[in-house]
Image 1 (spheres, rainbow, N blue to C red):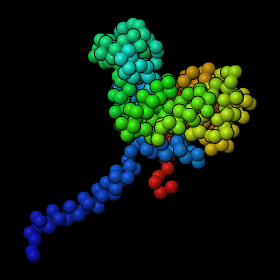
Image 2: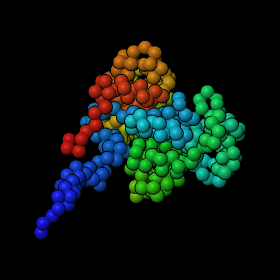
Image 3: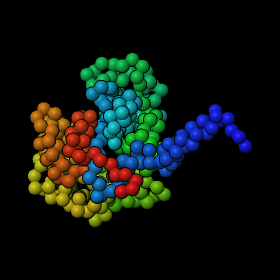
Image 4: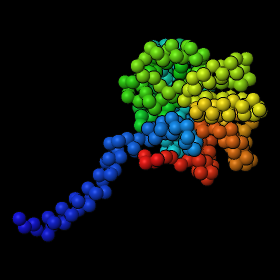
Length: 317
């Protein structure tokens, strides 16, 4: 059979395109291009040198905290995990809000538990400096999860008290593996709760070094090392360094909050921004920290990239 010159050119073009596109399709089909899965892989790899960046309440410097645009913004930045706070309305809808009341973050006032979700939609969200954004409403957790699916890992903060409701939602959306939840509950209680489900979200305990039961809770979880430990400390001393060493020796990740000085011994984001990032963040990294929750995600990412701590493992590694 003889082909025309145009047909031959088309066949050659198709052949070239197939060579270029098939590898990309294979990566897509295997989930290699799924950003959330790549982050989860780093979280589960104790040997990884990659530092996971968590954005506290999304990009609250430029958008209302816990809003959908704040989530979209940190996804564009390349943030790995977005921390979102949940509360439940009068009609049992989980919504994003840090406080028990809507006074600080919206144009309304009163407790979330006293409103139905439809009633909350009467109010607009406010930016950090108190300016309302007309038409921007409190989102539901479901809406936020739908935005985050496959794109970024989600830490549902204040969510352990609603564990069953959150889990049912993540299962329905097929994203349980990309959602993280934390608590300061005893290991025995968490184990019992998790045993009631066929599949569970990622979990880590919160250890407050200065609290009366902090050390006891830490030792309890060391008997069955979790994915990671969140350690909060107002002074970075030998006790904290000892805890950090134990966490890394156990094969768990270490999560440190640099959002406020009282949570990280004074080595916080604002100090890093105002003085020297290498000195401040370097001290946190020296603990073996591999997850940092920050209020300055873009700034932290730039520092970590320069320090060589943002290199993901490839599928071949």
